[in-house]
Length: 145
Image 1 (cartoon, one colour):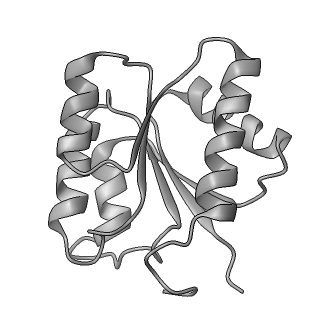
Image 2: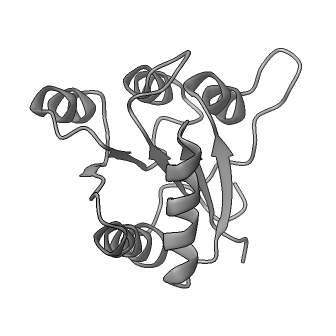
């Protein structure tokens, strides 16, 4: 069976390191691909004129506040593309703004999680996300898609 890949879309290097650390601490040893802005994430998911897209990840962890293309715009484009329309997207962000939460769900987010400040709480949240989306949830795409 093909390893389940996570696409982490996050521009903050500290948050990238914390997320990877939390996943590994909780024995979620999936392959993690990092996109450092929205433009890079979309290039990975749908490709460019010169680069084919990556194999679809099992899960996208998407920050909202990013340079070039915002997380909300990335989410909107993911849902507008036939290839990525059904891809599970979890918004994982520091924003607990009601407007961001509502807009994320309106655009098709599967889940919205505000990042806890303390590492222990953050680690627990990431573990729960990983266990659900990577172990329990049956994704829309067959293995190896």
